Length: 314
Length: 314
Image 1 (cartoon, rainbow over the protein chains, first blue to last red):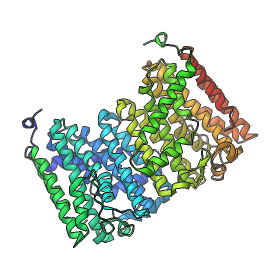
Image 2: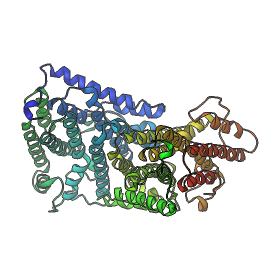
Image 3: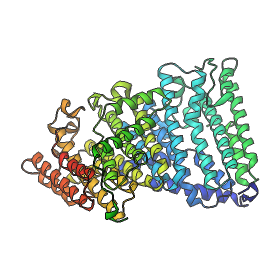
């Protein structure tokens, strides 16, 4: 398949995208419909709280932008990406003692630690359930899931041992956030049957967008308040995350030079403004990867996402 | 393939089985070799503590008994079954405050709750890594993983709410233990390319053996001591597990009549002796499912496992 073979999105693409996201919602709520009431209730609680659905939306937009039209086929992997993220925040709230998540009491706050731990485990196995029919695509999400846990672990370790170096920060956000964003967009492209060059470009779009997203998230964590963010704010900052503790390590990391340069610049002057500028640079780099796609409403929204990620207040 | 096509195990089957289990060990330690030191160290700690490797051994024995000879191919799913079990015990030790596991300090005791939680998550994602190349076989382990978490949740809920009915007990052991045993033997048979009737018989063997195994485990939990079991004993009993709290619910469960009858009998007379007798009945039922296999050393060990599971003290 060549680029020219990719079908542009139809004119009524708002409805199309809404239909795609409805399929994602259905896939998520269907898979967590356990016979075990506490797992069903706790899973629904955290899913019904909303969240921005950023990752599955990027997956479905990529799928549509690459010419995909079968939402029943593409929705379960997108749903799996969101559940993987959700599993990690449920466990994160145990470790961080977070009591507010997405503007509601956390699973931990309502059901207690034991059931929050098991609900997170259940969301993990739900990811696995959703992906099981997708053959070799399982590798993509398995890698992203492993990266996410590794990133969370590095973060907890860095906090505990006061080792929040710039190298660690770059490695952490690459693993805990950018890897899953990349999986989301790579899955969308592969599910649409895009050729390899397009798949790689979309993976790179997701990866760079994920880095920008996390940097902005950390900025908001420093400047935001609970009402705006809908989660227990100040926790990350209190634990030494974000930019306050970066040092001047010169080592290169998976996240590459641009992220390293973020950290270096944060050492002097207005750290938050510099971080914002670097997030902008990453988001613009992400947008460049979209050049390979034909114009469509879905592509336009992917561009819009990259622009908005650095201009949000929650 | 017919039964007659199944190759009998070679004469030097002890060496063969040792080689198969060596391949399982290699697959397990390879997949947990994370760049993140704490995950690597904690995973190795719990794996090096040993454990009986019952589940992967059953998987490899089934594979060999069904004529399989490619251990590099069959070992990763068997390793995944063991890591799934290991993930659950690491998380279980958080919820139960267990400080001894397999005769060593638990991950929780050494690294603390946060890293124990993340190590369990990492073992989950390692399961997913190992299974990713195995296409439709992923469904088998995804179902077993979900069942395991559901069973653990039902158990925690029953303990918390003093609802340890006989119905709940039967449902719990079916979900938390028998489902993963069934996955182990079903995977072994499918990986060997056994015909469907053989696959189902081996799945039933694993399921019934799993029920017997858990009943005996609960008996040992009541009568055992820490030295013999190598884990913090008395916790399960203290939390109301086992047989002390069963009631006379008449409802049928997935585990079926035989398990229900166990619970009923436990209500009167010598509960532990009756439970032992029912475990024996389940193990003998398991052995009957092996009749479909041609004689081999691997089959002989599968029979031996079923006999020994009810005659063990640890």
